[in-house]
Each structure stands twice: as structure tokens, then as C-alpha cells.
Image 1: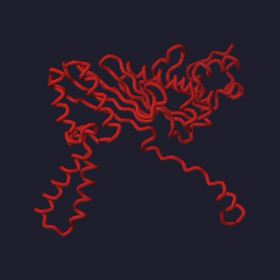
Image 2 (image 1 turned 120 degrees about the vertical axis):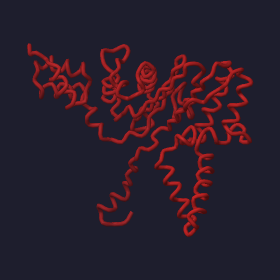
Image 3 (image 1 turned 180 degrees about the vertical axis):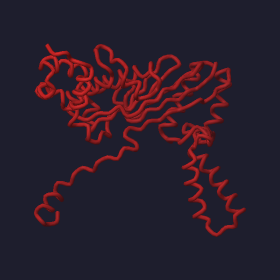
Image 4 (image 1 turned 120 degrees about the horizontal axis):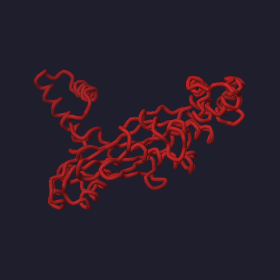
Length: 309
């Protein structure tokens, strides 16, 4: 019986992308023969994950999960929307979001965490799912919000089931006030965030590159103006821009006559205590992922034949 070392298991995992326990079993079954172990995994259908890794995964699900004063939001991608409706995939995403509540809010900590009901990590469980379903899948991003007192409200748009959908939002309200009032307000603000997609909580949270880009646009639009006039134009233009893209200054979608800041201030009377909107997170499925265009088979055939489609 060959001595199966951790290094051998690691090498086989990197070669096949199969789960750790599967790699260990393959090496044990083949007496440590690496090539034979690869063939063993292929025969079992457990080395498929490596072949899928290069495919673009831009579909999938966004999950929200909360427990007390802690909540997580997680995006897990797949290649097709069909997989997002798969019970096994949905169960994995939901469980991974729950596991994320105990981590530090990074994908690395989530991947390394133990997956309940198995002897594998979350990362290994995903590899097993890839091999079973036959599509590339990725744990794309995760965020974790916490409050000492108050609530973290959530909202899922286009939900396929409870807590899983295409757009997910978390809103953290810090307050010692009435939790029922805070919960209702938090959900309304979460729905607002889903609809308006603010860039930041306030102007201080807008990154410098965005500010410089907006300033450059204002300069181009007002080329030829004196420097002292130009600066006033830029300052005024940025002030208007921040009202459009920062959550606290946006008109509240449920009552556009008020800003979100004004709504928060009014809510303090009902809640009985000051209310602070501490943070928010909005994930829209696949945003920022460069999707592959569907192949135009008619054009391909015509090109091969030397004719126009």
C-alpha cells in the first residue's frame, strides 16, 4: 500500500480540479499512481471541473442571509440560467451564504470553510457540483455587514425562491429604536437601492477616479471659460452629480419629494431613537462580467462556404 501524502493529493487536485476526498480515494485505489488516479477520476466523472474552468460564468444567483445583527450577501455564478433553477445549485448557494455569516467577509475564508454534512471545504464542494452538473461555477464575491444595535434589512429582486435572486441588497441601520419600525424602513431603503443603484453612501465614498472623470466631462462641456468660472461650474456640477449617485442625497423612490436623509430623520420620531444608515451593499448578478456573444452559426457556415449569410 503506497503512502498517500498531502503533496500527492494537492498535485492531483491541481491537475483535475476534483475534490480533496475524491483525489485521496483515487490515489488509494491506484496505489499512488498519479496517471492511473487521473484515469480513475475521469472514469468516475469527477475530473470534469478542470475542463469547465475556462468558460465564462455570468449567470447564477445572488443570495442574502442574516442572523441577528450580522448579514451576508453572496454571488455565485454559473454558465446558464438553467443551472440557477437547479435544486442542487440553489441549495449550495443558500448554504454557502449561511457559512459566510461565520467568516470574515472574504471569498478566501468562505472557500476554506467546512461544508456541513461532508468532509470537504466549500471550495471542494463547489468542484464536486461542477463535475456533477457539468458547468463552470464560481464563488465570485461576498460581503458581510454588522451592526451593534439595530437591524440589517435585505431585499431580493427577481427572486427565484426565498433569499435567492438576480439582485440582492443589504442595508445596515444602526439604532436603539423600535426594531419593527427599523425593519420596515430598512426594507424600503433596500428596495430603493435595488432600483437606483447608488455608487456610495455619500460624496466621501465616491472614488477619486469617478470624480476626476466627471470633472473632465464638465471641463470639456465648458471649454473656453475663465479658470475662476470653470471651477465654480465644476463644483456645482459635482454637487448635482452627487445628488444623483449617493444614497443619502437621492430622492426616496417611495416618496420623491424627500431625500433618503430626510426620510431617516423623520423615522427617528417613530423609532424613538436616532437612526444612522451605516452601510449598504448591492449585488446585481453578472455585473462587470464580460459575457461571450452567442455564436452566429449561420454566419460561420456562410463564411466557411465563402458566401454571405
